[in-house]
Image 1: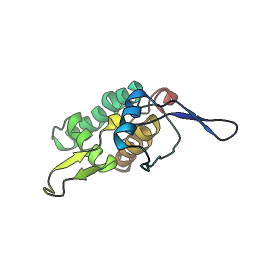
Image 2 (image 1 turned 90 degrees about the vertical axis):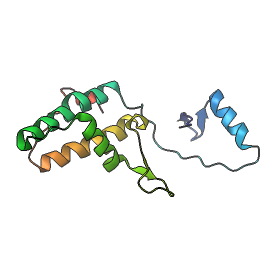
Image 3 (image 1 turned 90 degrees about the horizontal axis):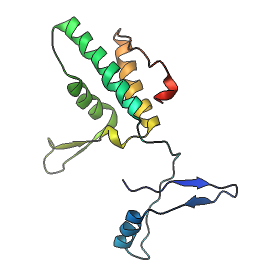
Length: 142
């Protein structure tokens, strides 16, 4: 993803620096060509703490619960594949509908990772009676 991070000044102007690789991308599009710029609040990329919580607490809690309730063994990777498809979405090939490209969780920022993935997973399992413990310091993962 090509992005420019900017700061809004007191005069409501954008203060930004265009990275070299993006300058090359702009050059490949061409002068005088209209481009779309989406503006949204900036958050850091998904954190190591968030990812650690998902893989060391959320998924193991769920896989253990499934094993105890059904005797079936599923892996954290099985869960991750399901939740990426379910909550992050995917792109389907027009020529081969069974060929899909699932959005990666590495593309998410800290807010998206928490709001669009972790909270949905924990809420889904809470509705089925499984409480997934929250991290000791929520500020570290949100």
